[in-house]
Each structure stands twice: as C-alpha cells, then as structure tokens.
Image 1 (cartoon, rainbow, N blue to C red):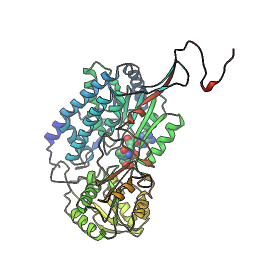
Image 2: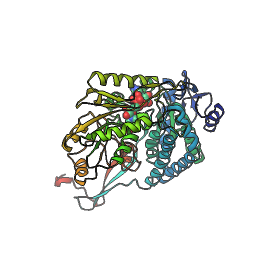
Image 3: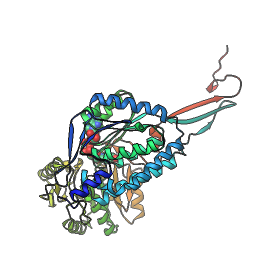
Image 4: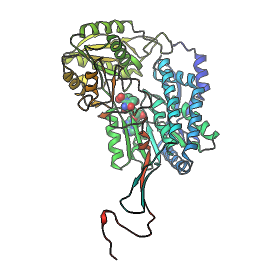
Amino acid sequence: MHTMTEESTRSVLRDLGIEDRNPGGFAGEWIGSGRAVPVISPLDGEPLASVAQVTGEDLEILLDRCRRAFLGWRQVPAPKRGEAVRSLGEELRAHKENLARLVSLEMGKTLRESLGEVQEMIDVCDFAVGLSRQLYGLTMPSERAQHRIQEQWHPLGVVGVITAFNFPVAVWSWNAALALVCGDTVLWKPSSKTPLTAVAVTRIARRVLERHGHDPAVCSLAVGKGSEIGDLINADPRVALVSYTGSVPGGRHVGRMVQERFGRLILELGGNNAVIVSDKSDLDIALRSVYFGAIGTSGQRCTSTRRVIVHESVYDEFTARLGALYARTSIGDPLDDANLMGPLVDRKAVATMIEAIEAAKAQGARVLMGGETLRLRGGCYVTPCLVEAPAGLPIAREETFAPVLYLMKYRTLEEAIAVQNAVPQGLSSAIITNDLRESERFLSAAGSDCGIANVNTGTSGAEIGGAFGGEKETGGGRESGSDAWKAYMRRQTNVLNFSGRIELAQGIRLDV
Ligand code: NAD
C-alpha cells in the first residue's frame, strides 16, 4: 500500500473521470473495441483501472474524425484558438493536485515532481496563448519593381503525438499547446504504461473545447500498442506531422516509416547527459546539480545525469560527498513528501538496471554503492547506483533508463569536453565552474555538442521557454519553446505583383 488510502485513490480517479474500465479512443466520442488492459501501479503492483485498446478499425474512425476536425479548426482565428488554450491552462490549474497524484500513481515519480510536471503543462499553455498572436511571417524586398514578397504560416494538419511514459502528460502539452494555436488537430498515442493520465487529460481538453463551441475531436486519443497502432499512425498520410518522444531504437523505426512517405517529423529521443565538474567550481553547486540530475524521477528523465566527469584534483572529495548524499537518499512511496526517490516504472526497468550494472562490472568498472532492489510494498524500488568508470566504458555510451551514474576523472578541459561529446546521444550537458573562460569554451562551437548546454546548473529540469531537444541520436527535434512552433505549420512564400505587367526574376526576358 502507499500513503493514499483506497478511498483517496478512488476520489482522485473519480475527480478525473477515470472509471474501472475506460475506452482508450476519443475523437468527439469515446471508443475502444480492443482488449481491456489493466494499468498496474509501480508503487505496489496493484491495478488502478483498465483501458480498452483501440483497434485498427477504431483508429480509422479516429483519424477520419480528427482530420475532419482539422478542416474546421484551421479556419478559427489563431487568437481564438489561443483562448481555448488559455481555458485549458485554467482547467489544468483547477485539477493540478489530482492530476499530479495520478501521474505519481501511474508511473511512480514523486508528487513534488508530478506537481512540477502539471505546472509545466500550465506554463506551456500560457506560452502558447501569447504565441497565438505572434505567428509572424516576414516580408522581403523584391528585386522586381512593384512586387512584394511575403511568407505566411498556415496550419499543417493532424499531428500524431506519440509520447514516452516518463513525462506522461507534459510531453503531450509541449506539442499540443503549440499545435492547437497553430491550427492543427492532435491525435495522441500515449505510452501503454501510462494511458490513464492520457484519458484524464483528454477528458479535460474535451470539456474545454466544447465549452468554447469547438469540435472536441481537435484533441483526439488512441491508446494502443506502439507496434500496431503506432505503426498505423506512422504510415498514414492523413497524419501530417509525427512528433515522437521515446527511445533511440523506437525513433529510428518511426523516422524511417514517416520519412518513407515524406511526412514531417519531430524526434525527441534518448540522452546520455554529462556534467563536467571543474576544479574551479563551487562543489556545493556541483553536488546538488549532479545529485538531483541523477536520482530525480529515479533516473528516468531524458535529461537525467548519467555521467559526471570530475577534475582529478577534486575527484576524491566530490565522490565522497556524493556518496554521503546517496547513502541518505530516502526511497519509497512517491506520494510521501519525505521520499526523494520513488520506484522505477516496472519490473522490466529494474531488470534492465541490474543488467547494466553487471555489464559495467564485466567491462572493468567498479560499483561504489547502490544498485540493489528493495522489497518495498511489492513495488519496483531500487537504490541509486554510483559506478567508477574507466575511460571509454562501453555500457556508459548507452542510455540505461535508471539511476546509474558513471564517475570519470579528467585532467584538461579539452579532454573533459571530448569525453562528454564521445557518445552517440546529444541531448543535455552542463559544466560547473566559476571560471568564465572555461564556461565560454564549453558553450563555444568547439564545446558541448548537445542541444542543451548549461553552466552552474545541472542537465535536467528544462524550462518551457527555450527550445527543447538534442542532436545526434537524440534526433534533432525541438518540440517546444522559442520558435519551435514553426515545425507545426507549413510555410508559404507569396510573390504579389501590382506592376500591371509581367516580369521574370533574374532579369530573364520573355519576348512574346
Ligand atoms: P519507448 O521508445 O519505449 O516508447 C515511446 C512511445 O513509442 C510509446 O508511446 C510507445 O508505445 C511508442 N511506440 C513503440 N513502438 C512504436 C512504433 N512502432 N510506432 C510508433 N510508436 C511506437 O520509450 P519509453 O520507455 O516510453 O520512454 C523512455 C525513452 O524516451 C528514453 O529513451 C528517454 O530518453 C526518451 N525521452 C526523450 C525525451 C526528449 O525530449 N528527448 C523526453 C522523454 C523521454
């Protein structure tokens, strides 16, 4: 059992409209003719409720309705679409506490982090409301007299949003809030590990859209297996853009399928994020940044700190102090505010962590502490693991989605940056230093090769304002923040001639 009683769990589910058995498809009305799959809480191994999967035939209906909803939605003025997104943010504020509790119950992150995740949804709604009046095109001077050139941005179509389990609601909102103001409709395929939060959010979105007099199929949902429903979405030309958040192998497969039909793609894939701790750093800042980055969300963030590259002169002190923090980590029920770490998402994740630690040992690394499974209330709990890694440890090139942190030593900054960049992934990175020259070198063209590079703050915990995403095997996509909205629209260039005669560009003569 966890700190929430059966009655309070029921009241959370009731408030969010979750029944014992829920249809997993929505596009104006709820459908789900497939098998009902129970959702097991990683907190105690108990079922929370079940969700009926959508079948291929269901998906056909859902896509058709979602596409039809697009034909109306694209004509709604963008600031009016923004008003609906503002109401969505308000509704999320009203349900913040319960939605956060459901996130914790369903995937196991601590309630503080779940509250942060729902806050992120609210923040991105606010961001998108402002954006709904700022979808600016450009005008440029024409080389031809009495001509004008302009660029304008039009809605794109249905956006297939395929999300990972670890941010079960925020990733949808990064995409959906932008897509909605851009005039797109959204078909969400959530992770099969976290369909209940998706059902809850879709219920909220439906209410908001209906209240504003819009077609609720603007925010559609399809719960089903990636290899079945996901593949149908990847292949369907009605889905103009597939925004995929998940693992690198998954992204490689989705990328190939969508590219095959020249569909648009946003890929937000795995990371292998490192922090460089300089001898010129404030070690307190370094410790806190690395500690939270490595154990937060039980190491199940795409931006989790997986490697720490420490200057040899401070390595022993840093490692000893980090070990002391690790030893004090309170692990258990994520709904209990006393705990900093909840469970992993499921038993498979626990097995993957143990396998990675065994591989590290076999490859010559030394486990300093942690990496044990904890028999707590039938849940998927582990202790966070510190591993001293020799340079080039093969397993440290992979993303193990668990709290395993590899510690490495360096002598020169060039060497540290080279080690940090010597992995296939390129999501997030950080340097902890008080030396301006070091931080500037880290941020320069010859520095970190990641999509995110921070100074004196860790790799995890991005704000919604900056463009979010990474390079190399992380996929190159940017789902939210800054000018990421452009990926959700189609750009059109217009030449307008008001000269009263026809003239070709580049001075080409047309004598007829
Ligand atoms: P996953 O790859 O197992 O699943 C992600 C999603 O893909 C799920 O919804 C799954 O059902 C779906 N899927 C599976 N097969 C598919 C197919 N053939 N076609 C379409 N969809 C398919 O990932 P996960 O375990 O849920 O999440 C963890 C991974 O996600 C980690 O690698 C993490 O780094 C990454 N992630 C990246 C970001 C980012 O922004 N870069 C954010 C969160 C998570």
